[in-house]
Every structure is written in C-alpha cells, then in structure tokens.
Length: 302
Image 1 (spheres, rainbow, N blue to C red):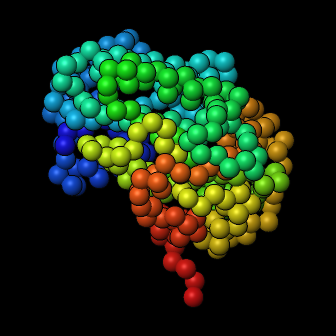
Image 2: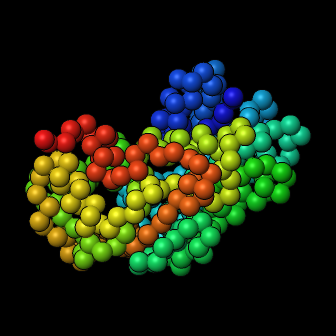
C-alpha cells in the first residue's frame, strides 16, 4: 500500500510510519514546509493549499496533525489554534479528496476521547452522544469537517484516542516525573475514569482502517479495560516501585493550568472500544499494568 500521513513526526505518526515501512508499505509524509526528500510532499493547511497530485497514487490518508492540546495554558488564542488546526486541515484534506476521480479510498482522522466530555460512571460507546466541554465541541467540528470526503464515497474513520502509553508522550513524561520524585498519587478523588491505550495498539487500529480493513466511522481508540485515575495511579506506582500516597488536590493543577487541568485530569470518561472489538481487532496490551511494564521496560517483581 501507499499511505500519506500528516503529523508524521508526532508520537503516533512516527510509530505508524515505522510500522508500515517495516512491513514493506510506502509512505508519503505531508509536511508544512518545502519537501526535502522523496517520501515528502508539501502542503499548507493554514493557507488552504494542497496539490491533489501529492495524493494521486495514494491508497489511504492518515491525518494526525494538530496543535498540541496539553503543552500550554488555554488562552482564547490557544483554544482557537487547537480548534482551527484540526478543523481547517481536515476540511482541506476532505475537500481535496472529494475532487479526485481516482484518489485515496480511505481517510483515517485522529479524534479524541474528549468527544464525550465529563460523563462520570456512564459507560460510553461509539453510539454515545457528545459532551459539552470545549474539547468535546472541537471533536464534533473536527469529525464533521471530513464530510466532503465521506459524501464523495471515501471511507472515513475517526479514531477517538485516549491517553497513549508511551515514554515520549508529553502527559506520560509529566506523570513519570511526579512518581519518580515521590509525589505521585491520585488526582482529586481519583474516581474519574481515564481512557488509555498502548502505542502499539493505536498504531494497529490505524492500520485496521486501511485497504479492506473493517473499521470506519467513529472508533474508540482505547483499551478494553477502563480504569479510574486511582487505579491508574496505583498501577503506575507498582510498575515504577514508587509510592502513590500523595493525592493531588483539584485546586493545584487548576491554579497552574486553568480549564486545561479540569479537562485532562479531572473529567471522567468510561469508554469501551465496542466497534473495534466487534470487528475482531486484537489488543496486544489490554491490561493496564502489563501495558505499562511493556512500555517502561519494567519486569514484574517475583
């Protein structure tokens, strides 16, 4: 296959490129600068510029690009960048694909588990409605921006991704630092559900959307074992062999991060990957502690 990928230098994008290349597939990385290599093509999502020729012999497009969500406090300008970087780039890709006679047959777009908002203990599947938070509305608009491609007959998938377990993930780096200096613990009550997924498994789900893959429409890219923040904290403490006795009060992160802290740390999303399981997708790391040990290279103490 020939797969075009935006956001190819990010966490998921770089792992996906490596996985596809290892299996003999060809990748083209869409970059927001002049192309410098045979496997690159230039595009300008902010300027609305994408040459359809760059996608002419491509079988599938994976769209992962977007302004990072958790790297800085949410000002009005930052929230606008978060939304526009996702919605406008998706719209440009979808409208370009809709004009092509023999273009890619698949568009797999990143989306977020935050689609569902803060829902407490409610069990959420792909059929559940959206939440009302800022990120929930971003996800709604983000997914809707792919409609031109969908209406033109392109098979579209939206992977609503939870916390990705990977050493290099920004969120995981921050958690690891807290635990390693002995300040790890639950956030607030710890009863809020944290959707998560191993990096290997989210890459496998993207690959399951390609070719004759069965996945399309909304796909919950989360592990089949929902856990609360307290359970997550205890598992990470066991893996790192560090204490998890210092609860983090809600006002602390909110004082530093504002609205961002509530969304990333205290909202509860008890999500199941119903569509992936129904289609027979295999999760290599379905259990949290085993997934953490595999990613962090920490064997179980016997």
